Length: 242
Image (cartoon, rainbow, N blue to C red; front, side):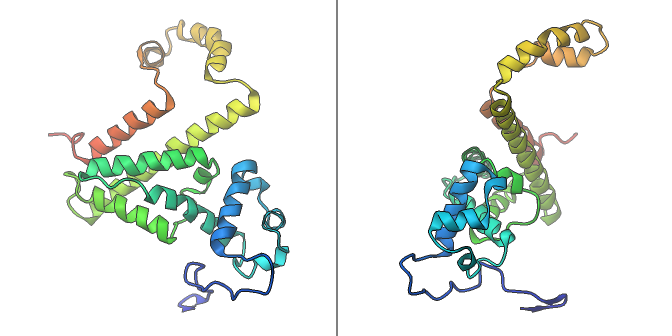
């Protein structure tokens, strides 16, 4: 494909599948993506290599390069395979319910595939399922009361995506830390509680003390839902001054 920046290969989504070979192991890009997702689920992105993937599929490593030009294309296929799960979210009638359904489905997918949030925000995801999720989300947000034009829509999408990436990465980081250290949140709190109490008793951090003592201590799902609701209230214009 010729572009103003030179000649680049067609995106993996537009290239036809390689012609089948006379081999006992049939192969498609969908099979490659599914196997790569399984490997990344088990060992993380750092445990994913072309050699391990080829072994999983029962083929030689060089054969995979008939289907994907490089690791970036492999990651694109994997990401879009996860977006396929998110795209199956139930369609709702109202804009807010639609966005909530997509965001909750995205969180569920991220918890199933912890490597997925690591790839969010790095670069645009342009696979067919990613575009379907983007279309559903953007179309729903465009119906929000506080979204009057395309500039408002861009800002609303930016705020929503910033919340989503931050929330998912934080939750996954906490899960990984708990596994690595063997200490869950309650154990961490018990270990650091005496120190925190001493610091708050100094009176130098009154607002932090209020958050710790009086704030609601929610589980991860409730925290996600309530914070997401706050973002959507802002999109709806409820947080704007009169």
